[in-house]
Amino acid sequence: MMKKRFLFVAAAVCLVFLFSSCSKGNSAPVTVENESISSGVFAYYLDKIMSYPEDYDADLKNTQQLFEKAATLCSYHAAANSIMKEEKISLSHSGKADIAAETESEWSLFGEYYKSIGISKPDLTEINTFEEKKEQLVEYYYGADGKNAVSDDDLKQKFVEMYIGFKAFEGSFTKTNIKGETVPMTEKEKEALIADFRKMADKINEGASIDSVYEDYCVSQGLIAISSPEVILMKDKDPMYADDFFKKVSTISHSKAAPVTSGSSVYVVQRVTIATSDEDAFEQYRSTVLQEMKMPAVEKKISSVAKKSKVETNEKILSEIYDSVSTKHSNQEK
Image (cartoon, rainbow, N blue to C red; front, side, top):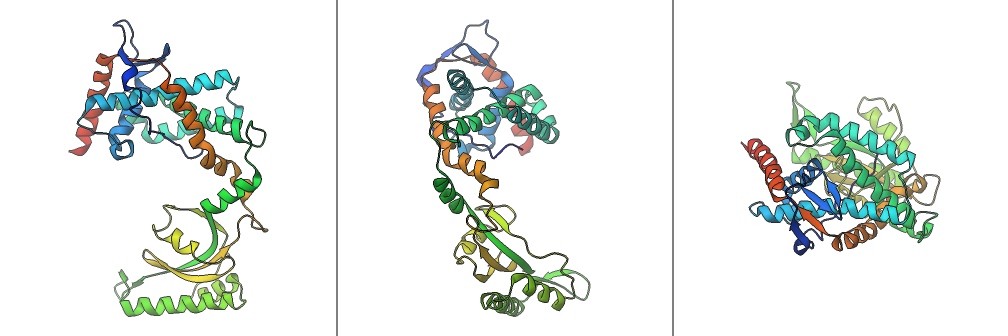
């Protein structure tokens, strides 16, 4: 699957003074240095901006501003193509496979919605192709064999900043009442559970393995430990955990254990080293870390090329696309 996407928007209004109206014969909503951008691609970005205006610093009441921001995002496509051509870079076979897989996945989930606002499957393929080109440019400039290759030491440093590694097992702050219903524990029961988890963490710090402590805990709950806790790699804001979980685990020293209360659960967490041991996951995440580390530089280069481009817009077509997208948004709000 393709990696996490990046939509850079810092320069979203920097091209405003370069916009001009296209000739009536031009059926493309946006043309960048004679490269036509399809109505579907423009609709995709306009929909994104209208769906998440705070992410794009957009005023939904300012239609012209919405047009300019969406057209600027479109201009990045032509800029990326220009850089790829200048550097004589072609999409890799694996990149093309990623594009196809990502498009199929998104289309199966959102295809009906996309079609309702004028986005076709080829348009979605173009969006994903642009994202893949950015990732390939990161590898070209900063990968192991790149022009400005990032050292393993720097990548590992970024890796340990981005991720935490840990083993854990969980207890819930809920219980089953006599009616078989799941209900919250009392404050006294919560405190007792946290105390039990603190004792288990202490055992690990005194030399017991988390596997054996977990097995004993399962026995005390009338359960069977089918498998031992595995090493989990987590980034901040992981949706699998409450918002404060990452920060709390980050305060635990490597190899040490501690009870962590987060959301509606308490955990016994043992922090593990993730970049220098048998549990080293660096190689598996090397590309992801590089993308996180150097994507801003590539996006800055694309934005710089885009700023120098001649961008023309067909206001009539933009208005038609806006009517379609805004109508859909209005219907969803009802």
